[in-house]
Image (tube, rainbow, N blue to C red; front, side, top):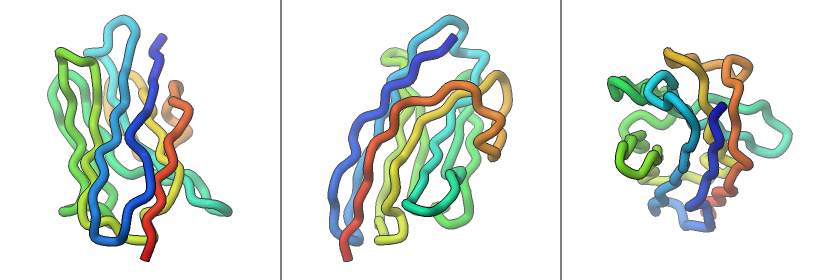
Length: 123
């Protein structure tokens, strides 16, 4: 069982930066992969980035490569999503999710979800 709590969303101008945090709790976190997904109004939830807790292996969707960085802090049991050069099309509710073992890009493969945090990028 894993509990996830996101924070760090907000309103930012295009070109600006935000850092999202996902505080994780539960047993055997080292066995999980943690991902960030986002969902804009009227659109499906889409994969953004993910990291394996144990090895730090990462995966990103093409539209955020070079702009977003996912990382984890063992001591704080927290995963971060550093978002730079934000664009209006990045506006969405961002969710943290966890699944056992390896990274997958399908939201259906993740069994644990946080409550989401709103990111709004103005033009």
